[in-house]
Image 1 (tube, one colour):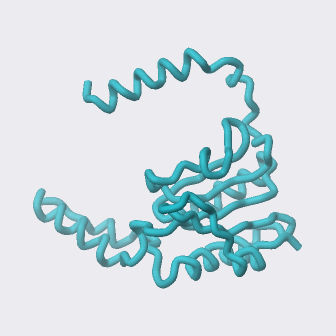
Image 2 (cartoon, rainbow, N blue to C red):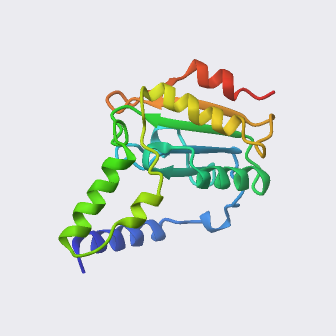
Length: 182
């Protein structure tokens, strides 16, 4: 087994040994909120937002973007599991900033060409790169949620930018206005 596999198995053994009564946690989050954030390894929502097991739903993807699948997950989180407050948290120095779908597709094409394959499927994926200013992107994503026909006006949607150099969450006033519950 490789080093990562060995380390993950060992960490899981330690975790399971101290698991206690966590098996009885409800799948309904006790704090009734959900977080959408980036998959970037520098971000740890449990630490920067004070979340422990059972508190909240955490949904991660490249860029912390409000994709169709994120909307699906948030709607399930709300309708089936009781969340009533959502946080969209993007971050400074994100690898998705400045990318284009074309640039991502080109990387897949290079790899496919080197291995005699085909990357045509990459052209059917919107990789949702972050275009323009980070806060503008965040505001667009919060607006996308707020205007979705299945998202009720009673849900509060927050917009924050996490600063990877300071660990601080910076509120987007514009996103907060758009995301305010009615």
